[in-house]
Image (tube, rainbow, N blue to C red; front, side, top):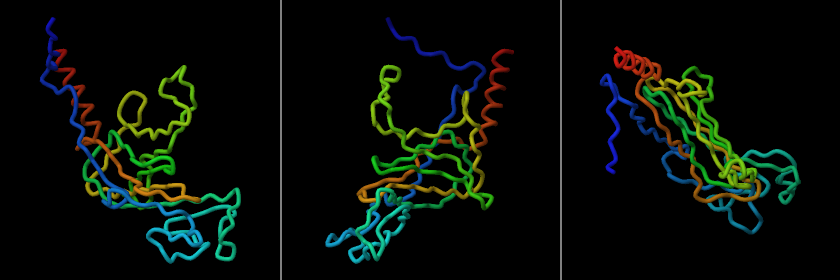
Amino acid sequence: AAVQAPAAPSGGGASHLNLERIYYMTEASAGEYDVPPAFATPSVPLPGYPSWPLGVPTPGTSCTGSCPTPEQPSRFGADCECVHTITYHWSIDNKSLIYAGGHCHAPSCLDISLYRNDTGTPQLLCRQATKYGAGDVKHDKFDEADFVALPPCLWEGEGLDPAPWLGPKTPMVSVKRNRNTRLGHFGEMASWQMRGIPFPAHRAQLADRKAAVVARS
């Protein structure tokens, strides 16, 4: 039997809204970037920093615990943990965010965070942290053991927060972190793949209600 096409929405209103693509790279339009290891190794040139001194954290790296020092360049205590961080600033004009998906590469990616900064105090909009599967495939077939996921941020919908409205030239900040205690990572990415609508989301809700009233009348 022939498949019948769905009926057009009554009342002349659209059934959905176009979500415009919004794309920015924390790596400043480089496409990819290299995360250096936290410390140079004796007799092994450090890519990009061939003369980097021993026992000194590489650019963008911060460490805690018993880590190498210029006096003890080979010290790596069990509690030594290092993180490499990059940041990027840009602005967004007149968008309600509906979806934000940060893109980075496992296994060194820790998290990627998106802030608005129109008040001078950055306000967190979205933070995506790596989530490891527990292996409970009986109840969730996608919960593979140690499988790494990076769940996106969503707004506007049942059980979700209202979409943030980003007005003219809203300052944005992205912060991306990778673990690099002993190893670096070539070809890392830190982009934001987002979708939004060019007006406050509540206007869309009002339009939907108006269309529903027209359809019932």
